[in-house]
Length: 300
Image (cartoon, rainbow, N blue to C red; front, side):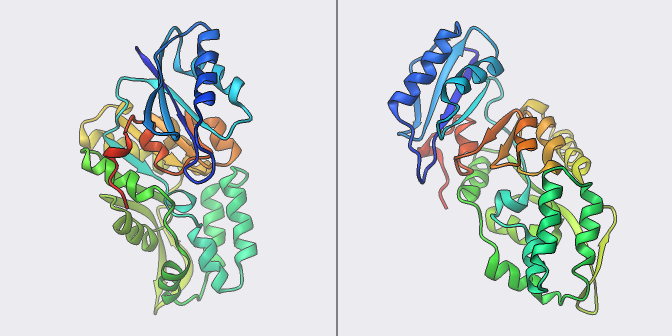
């Protein structure tokens, strides 16, 4: 069959039941699709349903209408190029659970002021570049050693992040961390999780203290998309062979450019603008979306 719809529950609190899978198949068949029997990628957690009869987007809409109040993620796509050869991911609130700039600001007693700007920028209410310059200016005179303290004491890797990166690496994919945050953190996070490469903004430091300036050029939403395109060209891939993951408005161009762009626990604007979304699952959901089974995972 040409298309596949994947149902993914939450590993921690919302398993995927046989009844829910049956409802999804019923929704597809009622809409006129021919469906396969369910193929479990992970028992009571992730399941594939292969189907023909209409496009993946129609299939997803049909199932969402039936399961709209259920804590289950739904990703529908063509089978061709399902397993991706390139992963580009945002860092803050995606690969890690925090926003690094907010955590640095907390050391200066400015968390509330900075995080308010961060949230507005991630919702798409503020220009990202201007908001970054504004937030960085508020960090002026902070000792650079604070960055190390923030990473050691406050930054945690999102569940499933290492498994996502390492499993795709084992299967031949190239991975890059692209962030509107700062290189100090992307360097450490990429090492900890296993990304091949990273790209982010650079904070100016003089005499061991932040100057409050970001060294140009600023990595913004368009730069993330360009990073994806450059990787595709360098690796000789097709666009359909790429996976991008992110949560904020500055990720939208990258998510829309990728063969599979997953909005991960994202702001409403981002989720509505992307061709796939994970609202409940951890980052292993991006592996199930590619058809990986539990036994293929490289575990933390």
